[in-house]
Length: 273
Image (cartoon, rainbow, N blue to C red; front, top):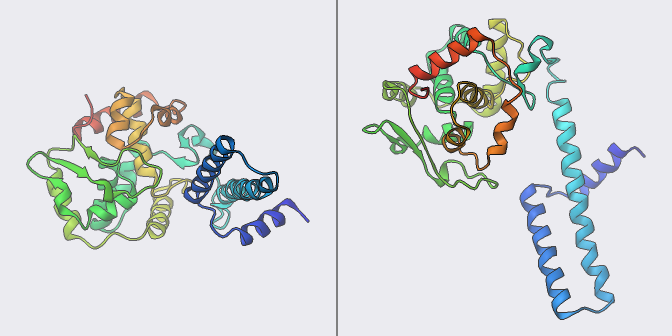
């Protein structure tokens, strides 16, 4: 039997393979170990103690195996392949846009409310789920100070450490963009937005591989790093808890013209220097 079938068989037996459940079981194992070391345990109890650890390790192996398979097959069904001429513009297989590509996409996006969503995502750098929740919570935007304050409920991401954050600065006329955003149709689900992006990319002559709901967020982060904005400031605005998350952008290379356009765009949004 191949390793793939073995893993899939394990997957059927281990229904809950989320990182959260794995972490809880690992913590439970550590607590039990401390208890045994402090109070001692009988030899018969060793098996009952090791067995949960084995299942936990099995879940970890299954989880990462499936993650690898998911990444390998992400674009197989669509037939898309990575753009060999833009390998320097990928971060973990997520395509980073250049300013020219952003402008081109804005031209081909047919509906105004889709253009507004695209702008809100790129300018704020919000996660897609945060944007969906912002649509339902106008009170998160402080028009007087022109900032967005995302409370803990905006993200609800298990691994996050920054429970809430403030997105600032924003463009001077951003209140009008948000007005159009809230008066427009409800934003589509992530899967639909992914398909939309890929369809628009094809219309714009851009390779659709790697375009997803993460593209706008990663694009803004890469632009900010390329423009010389402090990594700590980027992390704070974007809700990252570690500077190590910025290392992925060190290999990105923008041309001199692209860099000038990036700085110009960020300055117009109030983000640049």
